[in-house]
Image (cartoon, rainbow, N blue to C red; front, side):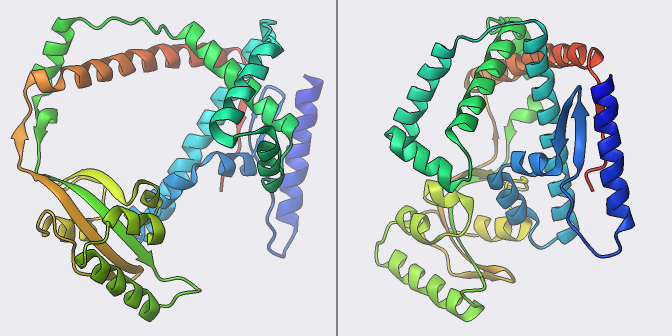
Length: 327
């Protein structure tokens, strides 16, 4: 309790000092305390995935208020995840469980082989990220603990009966009434400080000319697109009409296209877009035989979520958790 009191005193001093200053400053304040572990604003921001931020920007780029609201939602979700992580790690320590370091060594070897090729490249990458091999090892160790503790408390062998699957289908038939949908690839070319609107327009038109001449849409998207889907050659997957997977103005344009033909250059305030509808499907209701596995996955995930929530609530009831405003 002494340590906890000291931590709270530090929090109070930092917050008071921040209020006492009249000039604008950026403070890496505290978002939460879990037992004796501090979670900072920086921790929260680091836990928000850049791909989710870019997806929010693409969806709400023309609505600043909605974009800011989505960022706040992502940060709150990241904070909850960090708190749950600390609760699980704390439980591992409290129960005096031991993780053999040989297992951590094997996991690190796997990561090096799969992601880096060799140890030298791993160290070079860590240095570029301003972190250390020791911190990398600690992250691997913590991830191993989280996986092991989750597997221990959330049964993997959950059985879903055929009757439950049939009942879910019957009670939720509207979920399987598929709307019109298209399989879409997209190239996003945004106006940037190093490329004004005229230069971006010229690039977009040049890329369209290449597409009409037979160039691969996926290859050009991988080379030139500014949105995260460039890693998949601009593939946005299946988009249903009126879904939230694509901004309304972009969706309206996409659904007006003929399958198999690259679009005209589509200009918006933030930049220019090229699209390719690869396939199109009309609205219909999917049969139970088509969605049986999908329903089973839904019911399995619900049961896992229920078990996880019950477990986390038990951990929370035994711990000290205090939140501070994120803004």
